[in-house]
Length: 283
Image 1 (tube, one colour):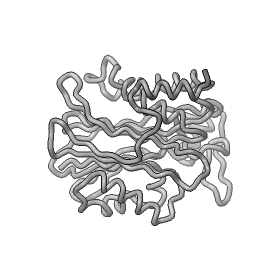
Image 2: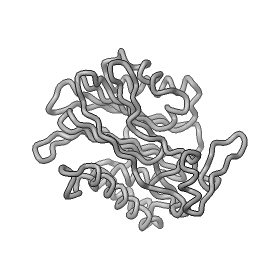
Image 3: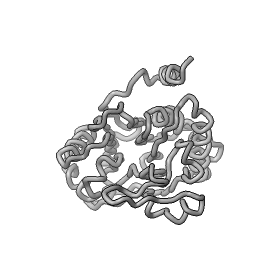
Image 4: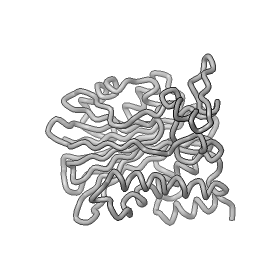
């Protein structure tokens, strides 16, 4: 059986079907005020869509978890698709998820990356960035990421970035300490070994010796000033600042419409990349 057929069977078994719908919405079971919506748009490149999302809520051990993620694949979509199916499962299966959530997430990120590298013959040579957000009982937010997809929260109308953009120029010393280099070709963005425009990612077996999959993890408490969260791939952030994104949807009540509007605005600003966006309305 070919690798792509194996991956298709894995997706069907996980209830994801053969492809991801490009838009959708949902709401919290425990709180009527928390709603979420997502939208995806293929970019102008000739390759297949490489972005995948998770936008869901579920009951676990009498607690409600909001699970939100953007996976932005490169050199193929199979790694991003694998993350969509497996990453949250790995996080929630960690024995210390409730007692030391940060450690559990870090371990799950590393374990999942190791699995992806071991399955390189099936999943291919590509990789993926990831930003994951777990909302616990509508009160506690745990954000983790590798790469340049980003999570931003709006508090009293002001944008606050929750994730860290892992740009090669910012991690040049770390990459060089691993034996790699960061290219700075005029007219192009900095790249690890002249190839990858992010300093951390899942997969990318040929670059992994110079590339980290260590996530940055942050926690945030949700209170009365917390209005909504935006998760988006770099197709949004290349053309919009955090505050511009917040301002463009702050008066929109429907989360799905807000996610769609952000992508439309990015396209109006000539974004050419695949774009995925999730908006979580907190009040």
